[in-house]
Image (cartoon, rainbow, N blue to C red):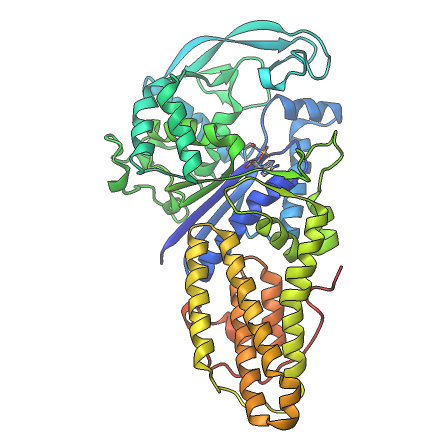
Length: 519
Ligand code: MSP
């Protein structure tokens, strides 16, 4: 059985689940469900990023220990992901002892291989916060909390020889052996690797206590980004053993690389698709592959970088008061529609704009008046007659359905979710038109034979519709099949069987609740 491994970034445990994270996670879930539907063995990893100064600081403010604070917030993520029907196979937390042990072992491996040396880190330090800030975090060049000048401070720390990976990385990306999509993002990384000299990376901190200790010098902890990236390995159960995963990556010929990772979950390595937002591209396109090359591990197959959304033209931020909360959205639109509205808002991989007004509009047009209305109309007509003649197939419909499936699958494979959605909506329009043209509400009185044929093909259309929307709107897909009276039968079918046109008997149709009440 083909395997499919998909990952999202792990989210900062300090923050509440936000819409940006929900966006990445829903997209990953759509992919995971699509590949499961195709009969593949899927592993879907997500989780929380739990170490670092900020977490410790917030915990302190709350009068809690860091781990209490992490437990509380990780649970919040899980809750929202459950509400959004996210079917992750593992929720990795970087405070998990296995992750901590494996990350420490990986750092030890770099050290043993001579890829780490001692140096001096200097940065801008706020004495009151007792932490370093990056230039980007400052407000008017001052500490964002104390509005005070920062001091330049230096400390001993360990450096990872990132610079030695510049050439191999360039080659891997340029040759397309390691895929970064969309092309603009690939070019962005290439541009950077071609014009800037890669600096070695400080991978430990002396003043950060809430972290994983450096194995040979416990007064230091591992820089949080480094161990966070390793979650993609520890999340499938990697325990950090170098010998277990040692593979013949020496000449960086990733193409011919067979992962020697073993074990039930470890055999998922490498990831098929890693989804990230564009803000964390450099970490994932430069540091992450360098760590893997250092570990002599096969690289992920594809890094897919999605865009950012603004809210009605502005950056979503607390100070602007335009934050859209995923839980709020679920309350208004329900879980399926929230998934739909976020994913259909703009082409995946590009930047876009969202707003509540647009969500309402789209909900009503695509879901209430589109999919929901078609299902309700067809079911109401189908229940007009006592017994329904079935298997009266229409060849033209068969062709349409086949084409829709082809286009849909092609779109999903390339993560063009908006194209897949377009296919579905066109399909709905096609059936709506057919319904209006044939006027089955008249046929039922004048020509029962033709009525039967029209209705059968409409019902068969709904069955396909239910399958097509399943990855995006799982609950609605099931509700349609349930109303068609075929949920159990269909659940036993594989995709190939489901895609065949006709042959299904609709003997237990029951019109129930409205799928998407108008808002
Ligand atoms: N903890 C790091 C990732 C470590 S992965 C080894 C992190 N976490 S995060 O919680 O800040 O962000 C996670 C994801 O949310 C990123 O993919 C980011 O791009 C996405 N988004 C955050 N705001 C967003 C928008 N406004 N629009 C779209 N996605 C955005 O970074």
